[in-house]
Image 1 (tube, rainbow, N blue to C red):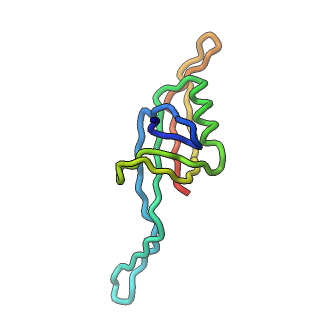
Image 2: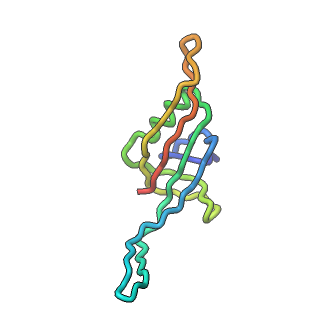
Image 3: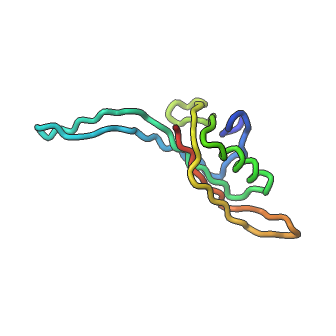
Length: 116
């Protein structure tokens, strides 16, 4: 079982995987100065990075996150269980390590998956 799955496709295991748990809320102070917070939702942000990927692996990863929205299955640290949600991808960065005999190798691939 893969750590991350997008639309049923297993992704390579990331070099770094961080789960941010974000509360979306509306906050204001009342006439007495007491903070009133209305929690609207709790969402996840997955910070994913790879130290090295082959061109085939990079193509697979970038293709998986190219739709506007997609389903992600991942291990959630709060529940210690796999969780599935609808996500979109932020900016994607990939540096080229080298280009030998016409074959590129990539390093420092980074992107965020943000829950819809």
